[in-house]
Image (cartoon, rainbow, N blue to C red; front, side, top):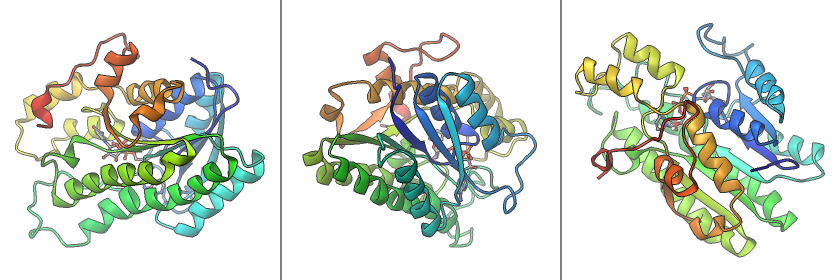
Length: 288
Ligand SMILES: NC(=O)c1ccc[n+]([C@@H]2O[C@H](COP(=O)([O-])OP(=O)(O)OC[C@H]3O[C@@H](n4cnc5c(N)ncnc54)[C@H](O)[C@@H]3O)[C@@H](O)[C@H]2O)c1
């Protein structure tokens, strides 16, 4: 599977699922633009990888990592990102992965508080970057896709929370909207052969989730021992990246446009495993 000659952008890729996706796209040979906030404005947590490290690893794996400081809460910075990509690549763009998410490393996301117990601005924390910025990025990416007339792929990173209660009200509603965003953008972009899908990973062993479970900070009504077991068996951050490489190299990807796709289902369909050789399975009760 080769993405040599392809240009991709992954938003929010210093750590977590975005980092895993960017590494796999790089390993497949793509030029990968990765975004994150400027460390001058948001001091990186020393326990987590940095955007610089992710960019270097993409290049070390055979792709080309290009880091751009973008705060996805700021529309003007998102617009400037796509202008830069257009200028540096003769307007070429092939893949957009909408992943940036601002709430995971805060105490608000898995606090166990009911919506009326928390302040209403939890909504903004979860959905300004986690939903609105995906719409804004997709506008600028779609302008390039439509003008270039050579297809394209947009992947929104979502979650089972779009279907079944998870974490809090703002999270579930935001994820349902991320799914619907993919479906409706797919409708409008199909005539231009641009595929848009929503991707649901299972539980993922991100740096933030591992730390939160260790510190007992996930209060979602699941016993701590069970949470520890779940995180041990969780997907690596790169498993979602393998799913996106499989989609991006599938000549029939348009057959999937508008759909919600589950990483483990794609693993079965395309025959890939996690980076440690495990076959990933997900209990359908998680989302039914
Ligand atoms: N962790 C899981 O188990 C899991 C499972 C399913 C779905 N998801 C979804 O995956 C997505 C990514 O989550 P994650 O767990 O990898 O989170 P994370 O916090 O580990 O990563 C989020 C990334 O977004 C970046 N970011 C945050 N605010 C930003 C801003 N204003 N501008 C630019 N970049 C910003 C962070 O720096 C980081 O690189 C989310 O939509 C989440 O709901 C996570």
